[in-house]
Image (cartoon, rainbow, N blue to C red):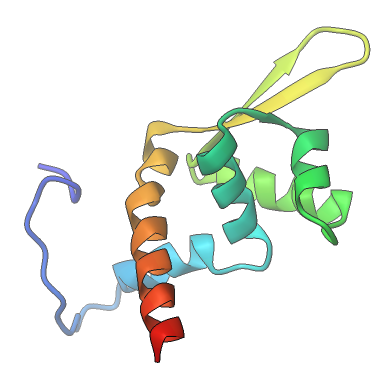
Length: 116
């Protein structure tokens, strides 16, 4: 049984392992990563230039670094097409698509905060 299928609860973890919540926040909590993931959740497969234009203020280098980090974690897949000019597309993996529920709950919480 994997973590997605088992019942989990909040608790104090006394082990030396990194807290799973901290692990998740390390993925979505870095600057720009949240916006990259949101763009891929909303729009599906995107080219590098599309992502760059969708996020005002991000540098090409930062976008490249964040996409590589997400790819290394298995959250985003990268497809390179042998064309001239080269075409590279990014899409969420099945693991990455599971972030949608988290994003929806974050939005719900944000709306609640705005009501106060």
